[in-house]
Length: 210
Image (cartoon, rainbow, N blue to C red; front, side, top):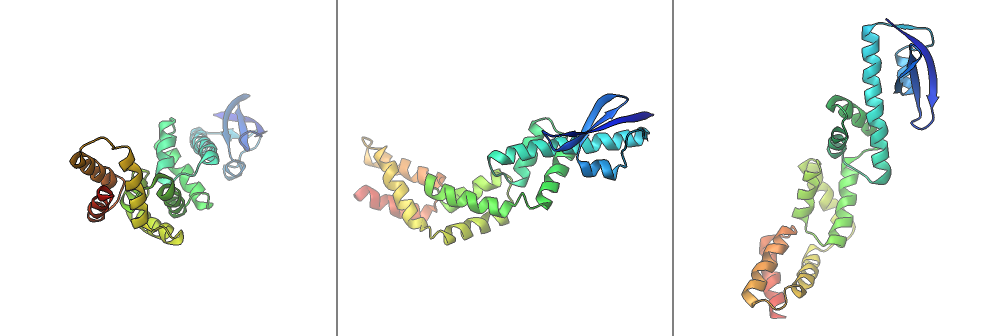
């Protein structure tokens, strides 16, 4: 058996530090303390200690997740992966992220729309690349495709014009190469940037003539 000997506010994390047998044992959310019925002087059996430890793991993962989100937006699956790489148990990482998603702090669709808006113009990448990059970040394909379409349409992004701009800029870096090599490299680069192969071929022909 273990004895709860203290419940103290933990300002840095916003949680409650639980002392067991006069030793700091875990930090949990205030709601967790209430749910577990914790109070000074209460005795914890083995099951209660295990429940307290589990809540502490989730709270710790949540604290780290909030720190990550304070610097940049992240999709759900990517955040879970990052927490696991930090050493948090898969179950704790998943529970913490799902709890945050339930509060509205995480929204894969909104993240994907913002990602598409910024990357399309800043990096001059096409829809296929945007979707592929979002998929690698853990966004579901259906959500990624819809978000990319919505973002490009909302911002009035003309992918054909974006393709021409990308081709023109890249062509400058290929000066000095034989025309055939320039064309081949330009096509391959534009396809990797996520533009449709058929459109790429036409734009490359036009760019080389110029």
